[in-house]
Image 1 (cartoon, rainbow, N blue to C red):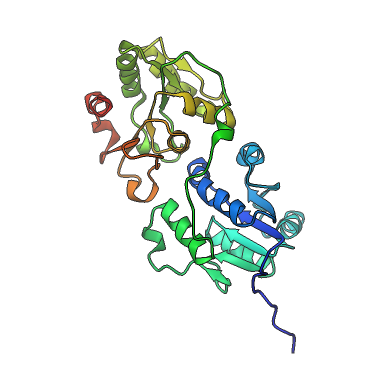
Image 2: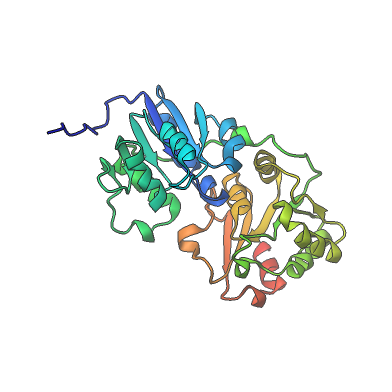
Amino acid sequence: MRPRRDTRMKAHPRRVLVIRLGALGDFVQSFPAFAAIRAHHCEAEITLLTTAPFRELAEASPWFDRVEIDARPRLTDLAGMKRLRAQLRGYDLVYDLQTSSRSSWYYRVARKPAWSGIAKGASLPHANPWRDEMHTRMRQRDQLCMAGIGTVPDADLTWLTAGGPVLDAPYALLVPGAAPHRPAKRWPAVQFGKLASRLAGRGIRPVVVGAKGDAELAAVIRANCPEALDLTGRTSLLDLGGLCARAALAVGNDTGPMHMAAAMGCRCVVLFSAESDPALTAPLGLAAGQVDVIRVHDMATLCVDRVVSILG
């Protein structure tokens, strides 16, 4: 009979793997968890397994010694699966912050090391039966607490503040995009254009940020407010961090850049439709009153006056 593999965590793990794939908002919401893991395992070599869009951001951060990219191979991709096995094996401890069905499956691929997550058989399970009803930040804090990391404060993001173009102040970031497959999360671009005109009238320059695919939305905004600056598709995530840190305000849909703005301490107004629940996913700021959430059933019913009234 083969001896059972010992999956108990070593007292001082030398090699630690963190798994966080996800979208930008999910990745940003894991900053405090990343920092807490680094502080708790200050002598360990820590590797992050993530996806390609976050490589530059992760490598610039102070939390990881190495960054590996998950190509998410299919089971039939033999070469890809071989690479994935090599990426997952050889660690003393794994923190699965993705906690998806796929990342939980990685537990078996990794040969069942000490594992914090929800994989069946994990030695450090996040066993809270209410985990799916918790905000992302609170859920990860609870998961790390159960794994022995009792303190998960806000992360120090001073390393992110210098990026991006330095614009004349004051300026406001407008984030009109959202996941392309979820158009109901988007406030109409023409409404963003009207808001941009109102901001420009107050002496605040509107600056539109987002992915390259958001350029059409930016064009609609500029048609309503020629003073607006279009930076869609022109900023890296490191650039975005600096722009957010220096902005007077950010207004946008429930999408990744708004999480970055909140994390950088920017005053935020985040627009939610019935497509998502702010109790579970809303950006969290660094101080009371920094982030306001407006939730409506249908974005088409949200008027500019209501958004402006929040700004004071």
